[in-house]
Amino acid sequence: QVQLVESGGGLVQAGGSLRLSCAASGSILRFNTMAWYRQAPGKQRELVATATNSGSINYVDSVKGRFTISRDNAKNMVSLQMNSLKPEDTAVYYCAAKLSYGAYNYWGQGTQVTVSS
Image (cartoon, rainbow, N blue to C red; front, side, top):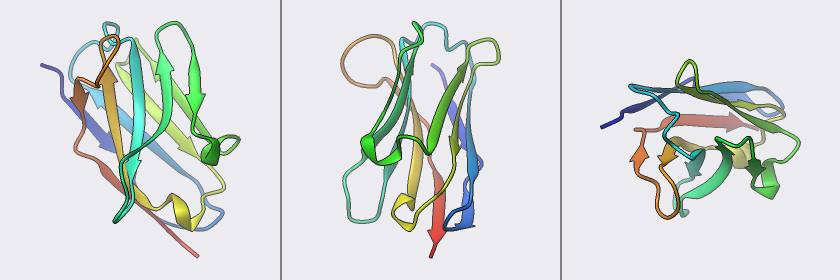
Protein backbone atom coordinates (compact mmCIF):
# COMPACT_ATOMS: atom_id res chain seq x y z
CA GLN A 1 0.00 0.00 0.00
CA VAL A 2 1.12 3.52 -0.77
CA GLN A 3 -0.18 6.56 1.05
CA LEU A 4 -0.40 9.92 -0.67
CA VAL A 5 -0.39 13.06 1.46
CA GLU A 6 -1.13 16.46 -0.02
CA SER A 7 -0.05 19.78 1.43
CA GLY A 8 0.19 23.41 0.42
CA GLY A 9 -3.45 24.39 0.12
CA GLY A 10 -4.83 27.58 1.59
CA LEU A 11 -6.55 30.87 0.98
CA VAL A 12 -5.18 33.19 -1.68
CA GLN A 13 -6.44 36.24 -3.55
CA ALA A 14 -7.22 36.08 -7.23
CA GLY A 15 -4.04 36.43 -9.26
CA GLY A 16 -1.95 34.82 -6.55
CA SER A 17 -0.02 31.57 -6.50
CA LEU A 18 0.09 28.37 -4.51
CA ARG A 19 2.24 25.28 -4.72
CA LEU A 20 0.69 21.95 -3.83
CA SER A 21 2.83 18.98 -2.93
CA CYS A 22 2.00 15.29 -2.77
CA ALA A 23 4.33 13.04 -0.81
CA ALA A 24 4.14 9.29 -1.32
CA SER A 25 4.99 6.81 1.44
CA GLY A 26 6.80 4.60 -1.07
CA SER A 27 8.33 4.64 -4.51
CA ILE A 28 6.24 6.22 -7.25
CA LEU A 29 8.39 4.68 -9.97
CA ARG A 30 5.87 1.85 -10.38
CA PHE A 31 3.07 4.30 -11.09
CA ASN A 32 2.76 5.03 -14.76
CA THR A 33 0.69 8.14 -14.10
CA MET A 34 0.59 10.64 -11.26
CA ALA A 35 -2.23 13.15 -11.35
CA TRP A 36 -3.93 16.06 -9.66
CA TYR A 37 -7.70 16.16 -9.53
CA ARG A 38 -9.99 18.76 -8.01
CA GLN A 39 -13.57 18.87 -6.83
CA ALA A 40 -15.49 22.08 -6.33
CA PRO A 41 -18.64 22.20 -4.18
CA GLY A 42 -21.59 20.69 -6.02
CA LYS A 43 -19.44 19.60 -8.97
CA GLN A 44 -17.92 16.35 -10.15
CA ARG A 45 -14.27 15.57 -9.57
CA GLU A 46 -12.19 16.97 -12.45
CA LEU A 47 -8.83 15.82 -13.78
CA VAL A 48 -6.49 18.82 -13.67
CA ALA A 49 -3.08 17.53 -14.72
CA THR A 50 -1.19 14.30 -15.32
CA ALA A 51 2.47 13.34 -15.50
CA THR A 52 3.62 9.94 -16.73
CA ASN A 53 6.87 8.07 -16.21
CA SER A 54 7.71 8.61 -19.86
CA GLY A 55 7.56 12.37 -19.37
CA SER A 56 4.19 13.02 -20.95
CA ILE A 57 2.31 15.88 -19.30
CA ASN A 58 -1.26 16.98 -19.87
CA TYR A 59 -3.56 19.65 -18.49
CA VAL A 60 -7.24 20.41 -18.59
CA ASP A 61 -7.78 23.39 -20.88
CA SER A 62 -8.89 25.70 -18.07
CA VAL A 63 -5.48 25.60 -16.35
CA LYS A 64 -3.13 25.51 -19.34
CA GLY A 65 -0.52 28.21 -19.10
CA ARG A 66 -1.22 28.77 -15.41
CA PHE A 67 -0.53 25.42 -13.69
CA THR A 68 2.59 23.28 -13.88
CA ILE A 69 2.79 19.67 -12.71
CA SER A 70 6.15 18.21 -11.81
CA ARG A 71 7.09 14.72 -10.83
CA ASP A 72 10.21 13.81 -8.83
CA ASN A 73 10.62 10.04 -8.80
CA ALA A 74 13.76 10.27 -6.64
CA LYS A 75 11.91 12.12 -3.90
CA ASN A 76 8.60 10.28 -4.42
CA MET A 77 6.79 13.56 -4.80
CA VAL A 78 4.48 15.29 -7.23
CA SER A 79 3.85 19.02 -7.18
CA LEU A 80 1.39 21.40 -8.75
CA GLN A 81 2.49 25.00 -9.16
CA MET A 82 -0.59 27.16 -9.57
CA ASN A 83 -0.19 30.72 -10.81
CA SER A 84 -2.68 33.42 -11.77
CA LEU A 85 -5.31 31.75 -9.63
CA LYS A 86 -8.96 32.48 -10.26
CA PRO A 87 -11.99 32.12 -7.98
CA GLU A 88 -13.14 29.23 -10.18
CA ASP A 89 -10.02 27.31 -9.16
CA THR A 90 -11.49 27.00 -5.66
CA ALA A 91 -11.79 23.30 -4.87
CA VAL A 92 -10.39 20.42 -2.89
CA TYR A 93 -7.32 19.19 -4.76
CA TYR A 94 -6.42 15.52 -4.72
CA CYS A 95 -3.27 13.66 -5.67
CA ALA A 96 -3.77 10.31 -7.39
CA ALA A 97 -1.60 7.48 -8.69
CA LYS A 98 -2.26 4.91 -11.38
CA LEU A 99 -0.23 1.77 -12.04
CA SER A 100 -1.11 1.44 -15.71
CA TYR A 101 -4.41 1.80 -17.54
CA GLY A 102 -7.84 2.15 -16.05
CA ALA A 103 -8.87 3.62 -12.75
CA TYR A 104 -6.54 5.36 -10.34
CA ASN A 105 -5.33 3.01 -7.65
CA TYR A 106 -4.40 5.42 -4.85
CA TRP A 107 -5.76 8.77 -3.67
CA GLY A 108 -4.71 11.35 -1.14
CA GLN A 109 -7.06 12.90 1.39
CA GLY A 110 -7.19 16.24 -0.41
CA THR A 111 -6.16 19.79 0.35
CA GLN A 112 -8.45 22.81 0.18
CA VAL A 113 -7.63 25.68 -2.15
CA THR A 114 -9.75 28.80 -1.85
CA VAL A 115 -9.30 31.75 -4.18
CA SER A 116 -11.01 34.97 -3.17
CA SER A 117 -12.07 37.62 -5.67
